[in-house]
Amino acid sequence: MTTDIDPFPLYGTHEAETPALQLTAGKLVVDFKNGNLRSISYGGAEVLRAISYLVRDRDWGTYAPYVENLRIQQQPNGFSVSYLARYTGPDDTELVVDVRIAAQAGEPLIFEADALSATGFETNRCGFCILHPIVGVAGMPVSIEHVDGTREDTHFPDLIDPWQPFKDMRAITHRVTPSVTAECRMEGDPFEMEDQRNWSDASYKTYVRPLALPWPYQITVGEPVRQRVVLTVGEMSRSPANPLPPSENTAPISLGLTARSGIMPAIGLIITPEEAAATLRARDKLAEITPQELLFHFDPNAGHGGDAFKSFAAIAKLHAGKSTLEIALPCRQTPLAEARQIAAWMHAANFDPDAIVMSPSVDRQSTPPGSEWPECPPLDDVYSAAHAAFPGMRLGGGMLSYFTELNRKRVPAEPLDFITHCTNPIVHAADDLSVMQTLEALPFITRSVRAIYGNRHYRIGPSTIPMRQNPYGSRTMDNPGGARVAMANSDPRHNARFGEAFAFGYAARVLDAELECLTLSALTGPFGLIAGDNEPSPAGANRPIFNSIATLARLAGSRWRECLSSDPSSVLAFLTARTGTQRELHLVNITPAPRRIELGALRLADHPGKDILTLRAYEVASVSLMD
Image 1 (tube, rainbow, N blue to C red):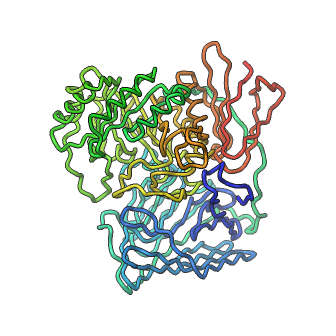
Image 2: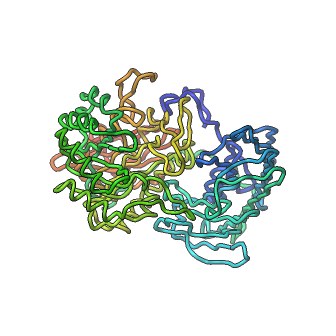
Image 3: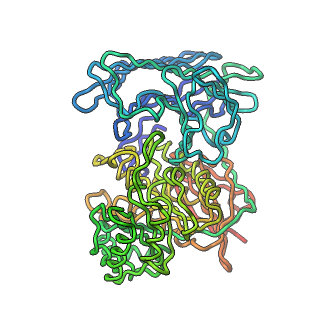
């Protein structure tokens, strides 16, 4: 979307994303952006989410290439693109990739690339990534052609697969609509697929070079690396090859109530020792939010010691709700010895939380396929130590990192009162569309957790756009320029309307998980609800996300009712009501364009005759309804 309006209120940065260029070849429509293809559709139906050529560094960060000699031609019946991409690595190493993309109406789409290095080049991955969508695809039939020529007729995973569902792939064929099929053929090295819903990506990712092979690895001097993707779309019944160009859909989005309902979760805030002093200074803001839960984070490996509990105790005195202590156990001594030391510090400071979450620090680090599991005490010993050191307190377990790690190392549930994990939307990509699309994956995550752990109490968070810890590399990425950076420890969109919409949309997407508590922010700092020093907004001013968290905290404990949107990729909605109070309709626009909503049988209390609402880009709204 092109606009002359300053993007800062929406994204927290004056830098607008490069708009995608739409290219067509008959009924095939693609968005070309940053050298790759997005939103690949045929006759208006999504075929693939993306075909990208990516180069990863040793921390799984994505290199940003310098693109030169870019040539784009859109012809009446097709298009072609070519360019050179230059990648610069450590010690002045360089990789040059010659890229060519072409499609004609009725013919396959071909995306090919030749990589060559004059210096040698270290990488964790160099090559194509193909993303299949998840909505309407999960659990559906798929045909896999393997490298040895054998074919496997199977299904896309429905529940999230912790490991690669398909390996040694040469081609993958699936049904896009009842009358349209798509074959994606990958030439070059063997490909395999991972279920990216593990990381809350809204896709299945087919990528080059099996993870069982060593990484990082070297691209040899002077030896070309050639790969090609061929996408062939077939129809059971032919229709005109040159439809009219797609036009923007301006029809209102309709809402429909269902019988599904539940109770809104408690809302938490994460408190770290580093932000404790700032949190105390912002006590008035804490009182304004009135969260139901404070989640205090304690990590001796990060230098946290007994003094942290004095600050925690002071904050807890300001809070009328419950509190939980989250412990990243170092495991340098026995779990019992370490747990008793932490308990002694806690009691000396008169800090008395309602619950404990204890997890070995090493379990925050991901263990990819083919890797050795790091040494760690048995989790039964860790949980026994927690019960012994903190008698009478509720005990939570799971992962202090993400669902990926919980899915791959499933904790014993019997000793636990509740299960917990986090998510992060910028593990693999940080563009606006990819981040907001991660909301699609959340119901699959919560349903997978329920399939593993049944009706055990369940918490999520802290889950924020910025990444608090990187399980997939040695560090999170610094972001002093406030750009859109994958795996960054700060993100400008958290400070803007985008962050407000993301948080509210997150809550809407996990309602039917029956969460005990949902934590989507801190009070201060890069994950906070208020601005800090050296920001455009005055220090202490409310960030837009403040409004979402305050509303969700106000709604905690009320009954929600499902409100289906005719376009959940644009607008999400739900109803709430408390006994003796008026019903409220809550809506969020998760797109960068205004959206009109048709209320149907729902009637606004203040404007009973009004049946259309308009939400601005990334706007959150709560309106009272007539009984």
